[in-house]
Image (cartoon, rainbow, N blue to C red):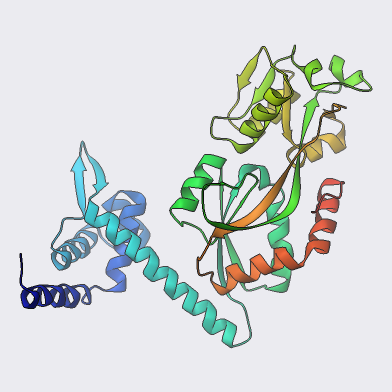
Length: 329
């Protein structure tokens, strides 16, 4: 084992070495990580490929560790690269937060909101952000649409400022705020036999094919759990992989779908689809805005969270205008 003096010397040496890293080197490194390619990183950074290779080689010399491995012509991150990637995300995130704070001190809110949302919310959230940006016109949006499983992974990795999802994980320490109902309904073409019924039970739908989302979808899981609870077992299930696939499949006459009302609002308004009068529906889930407990929010993220919390009346009116049905919480 190293004596205390030798340990201190090594630590100091490492610190001095790391302090010689430049922001440009980290930017190049992050681009290589994102693209898994030196040539694509060179394209993005407006550099030559040898220049990118030089920057990475200099970083490796400073770290004393290789950053990338080539296996079968594919680029893979080493453990050192993964550690550096996490550190660089933190560094650039803090700089972005500082920029926002300095803008805030000047009396204007500026910066980018990194927001991940479950796909069931993608029809409404752009309208919600537009309402927020009317109050803060210098804020931009980086929006990532994912399914429930992917959202949980991003949450665990702290990839985003905030997330919007309908089923909040109960095994994670989170700050969350329910702000809008997400009604799931049954739809069919207007010429479908069930569309002529005045009232239906969920079990009445079970003789018809049901179009469902991909595994990992929160909407699919919620519907499966609810149908099981109501003893409604569909004999024919067809997986179509997206809400758009569900919607188009129903329009084509391939089957029925249990789908968020927001996803088919235009088709319902135009009479292309019919909401079936099922007594046990709509199935109500709440969209929630959330972040890990203890996470330091940037000024932009905090402002958006506060907007959702404090503007319930405005959000309710927006939801009513958007879907034709008032459904705020």
